[in-house]
Image 1 (spheres, rainbow, N blue to C red):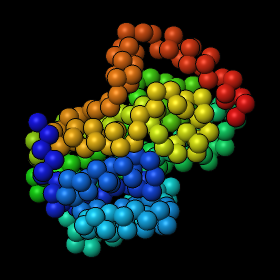
Image 2: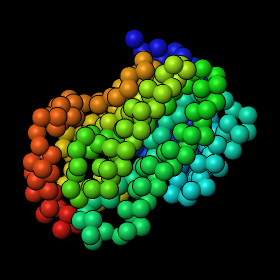
Image 3: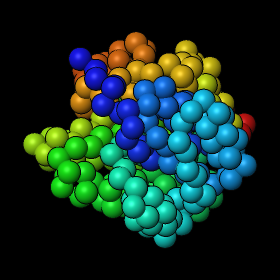
Amino acid sequence: MANTQEFNGKWALVTGASAGIGVALARELAKHGAKLILTARRKDRLESLAAELTAEGTEVRIVVADLNDPAAPQQIHDASEGSGLIVDILVNNAGLGQFGAFYESPVEQELSQVRVNCEAMVRLTRLFVPRMVERRRGWVLVLASTASFQPVPYLSTYAATKAFDRFFALGLAAEVARFGVKVTALCPGPTDSEFFDVAHAGAFKNRGSQSAPDVARLAVAALARGQRTIVPYFGGKFTALLVRFLPVGLITYFVEKAARTEAHSA
């Protein structure tokens, strides 16, 4: 059973809290009484969300930081737990993607995906989890994706980073469970957000998209009950099951064929 009442009065740090699933996760945690530390690059959006949640009675702080900068995780830690707050809930939501042929895409955009989706996530988790272990209490949500279950041509780097995120979450979950720390990998599929526009991934947009609030509601409930992987919609669950039985080469063949035209037009 999910006991989200445990979140009441706890500080939750949400990265990528300026849009999409990040905003929805912040709102969902606030519904369950969590206090929020919101961080992202866009100050105006953070301030707008903070004002909304504060008006509803939630205690909120914001930290403007760009996780593409290796110094950002320490900056976020110093402004939160380093300043005396006890962060019991870490939501590693920030991430980015890039749709297109790898050999044609800007290399910096490919490397940014690795820095934000993987390196920054690991750095933040390493900064906050030790205190959770000491307190014998904590929750970590890592945003993976249904793309983590198989290679995805034209989203090659993105899918690889999400496979990293999911495996990292599962390994860490097994390590820290005995200390009362729960770790959940959230694996959404297409979700109504800015991701597809920012990543130029129109080929994957609106394919049974789920609303960000629905994803957040299911994710927070899964985190509360200590579920190690949550795939929040049926199509994603079917895909995750299907790839266990189909050859990877067959999957990538059909995905590449379907996405090639869109990639070249983009």
